Amino acid sequence: MTNETKYLVVGGTGKTGRRVADRLRERDLPVRITSRRGVPPFEWAERDTWGPVLKGVDAVYLTYYPDLVVPGAADDIRAFTELAVAEGVRHLVLLSGRGEEEAEACERIVADAGTGWTVLRCSWFAQNFSEHFLLDAVRSGEIALPAGAVTEPFLDVRDIAEVAVKVLTEPGHTGELYELTGPRLLSFADAAADISAASGRDVRYVPVSAEDYAAAAVEYGVPADEVGALTELFTRVLDGRNESVTHDVERVLGRPATDFAEFARDAAATGVWAR
Image (cartoon, rainbow, N blue to C red; front, top):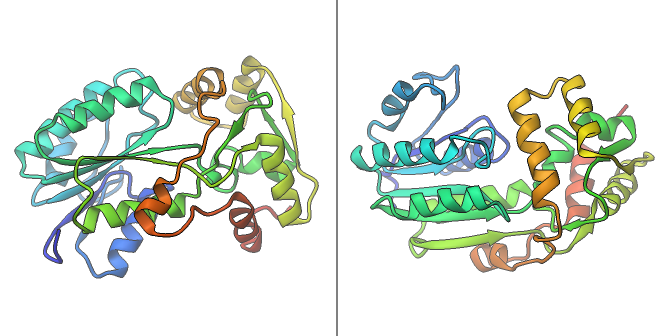
């Protein structure tokens, strides 16, 4: 890709998308982001909004809301990629989920779309503890999840964004599937301990049933479609299948992935976990 390449970030206000867009802008590269209130607006549920955002675009960072595991995701990804190819898009970079069969089906759709592609298959985001559905739990001092003692190589979304920009803007990544993880395995109790150490607060992990978690999430105001995707994640994907680390972040960036403890220190310094 060149400085004349026009980039589209689907989900440009999300955890990874906004960071990808910011890094592209820092390079003075032309970038368009999608959002419901954008110009033009974009809604996954309204396919007539897809075409306008793809006009004149060369490369796409593709995320799907709320998650690739939800029913209908594969149909949407197939329709979107077909439209993207018809509009002349030359490179699709898909944000995918590790250990999710439905996500892997979407990966195959993108790979078979008939244009350049790269897949970023990612483990659990560290920033879920600081920006999303676990933020209030951390602030309350109790992270109640149906995850048992399973371990996960928590991945800093800043690393995802850096990898995404690298594969969008530099040659050599077409046709690659990068499986991105953090550098070590932690249980959710370990993650709570790192957050406690960084924030100076007492934060603990409490295992609960999937049913109790779903009910509490609804009570906290998490949208119903997200609750379903999250419950699916906990009950099926967090079964030990992802209890391994890879070195693909280092393979792309030339440096190790960011450790969860470093993420926790950086997040704590912003005051996000203050009472």
